[in-house]
Image 1 (cartoon, rainbow, N blue to C red):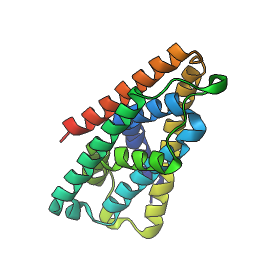
Image 2: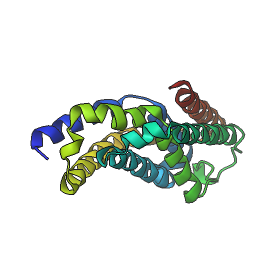
Image 3: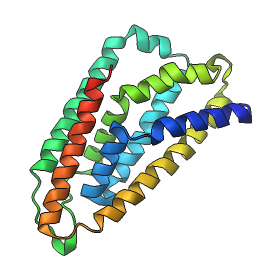
Length: 204
């Protein structure tokens, strides 16, 4: 890959991924309610999910995505349903916690599935890789080495963006010590997660 192409891809991804959307909203909600360590599986799943979309585009499966549109619609609505369920769980979560810690109920596997759901089911991400990316890069000329370069570029951009959001959310979380504050945090997180589900559902 030419350096210019990688820089253009990085800039476009920075704008698309950095703008607040369902994925960022879900990430912030998770960090506020679970903390950074507990949210790492969620982050990892988001990055892997974006890598999957990038791979589908690079290896010419955009046509497959259009042909089997119903399958992608199913993935979208499964993600919406799961995020709505998580929002309900957050809304009804207990506020009892020792030493100022937030409730930590979800297993790493559940967090990973949630991150994968919000990424694979987000039409914004899907359209960036399957519709916008081909207008930025000539995917027909991308080799395996080029795919690796794009994947590494994607990882650097996403890690920088997501960790910045995580840091901001973590700073906010430190202020949430009392039961009342924890209850408000759970409710805000639930509302944000529900909003992420609604945003994904509303997009075509």
